[in-house]
Image: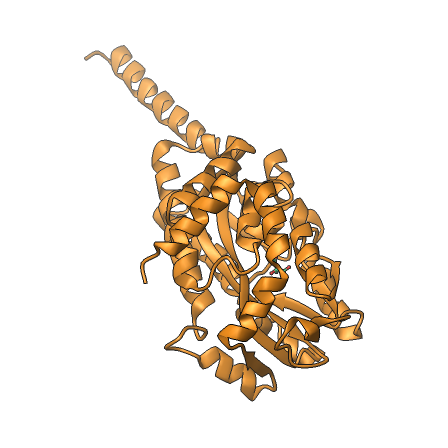
Length: 342
Ligand code: X2X
């Protein structure tokens, strides 16, 4: 090889490696991941784990940064899905409740007393229902990636123990961003008012509302007992899974190998989040409940007959929303739960 040829070969190699670098630099310096709850809530831990696993497995090539408190949508958590579709947010780990105004199928998990236990939740998210829900999200222009969990939402209030629907009569309840919650609490005789999580704690502190509903891990980390929420009823009426998802264009810009890494990291981080979300609230580990009791929370367990009264009182709401969500999907969910592994 003469010198000219050698120089040409070397510069071709240089150009090639330059173009490869150019390809990698198509990636953003940072991908914004939205969440409502940050660390140390299980939700925030799951999102952070995703970022860590992705950084580790891509040797720092892909940088996910978690923005908690719905700050990328000024605290308005029901705008998160739309903002992600528009590309204001690249990715999110979001609650099915907060995205349900845009994806009606996500109201499934908010149907009162659909899921009796964790096995029922798993039967939905890990089975054909989960696949159909992901298709519905995809149809709305968002790429869903993996599941995690906020948890079973238990009701708390500052006034009295709740053992039957009549105990909710006239209580001012803060509810989340789907009109289904207004219907449920109205059917139970309460006085629901919808507000964001950002507004909820101040409203509880000032007594503008008497009660709220959230998973016990949220009660724990947010120290809800310190704002007078003494009475907690474990009625397991609904649960909100979390979904890892990405803006479509952002997702399509990753190489297939990197998509696989992002996906596996989300699956792993999601499983970690589910473990944290259930810790201390299962049949064989009640440690979180014990700890909250020690801090002054008073727990009410419902007998089957007591629970049935809440089921009966919300049956019409269930029927109305079954039609709205799509009765085929709800039928499939009921069937998946009836056949769940125990
Ligand atoms: O707002 C709530 O209650 C929360 C934090 O649980 C959700 O984002 C659904």
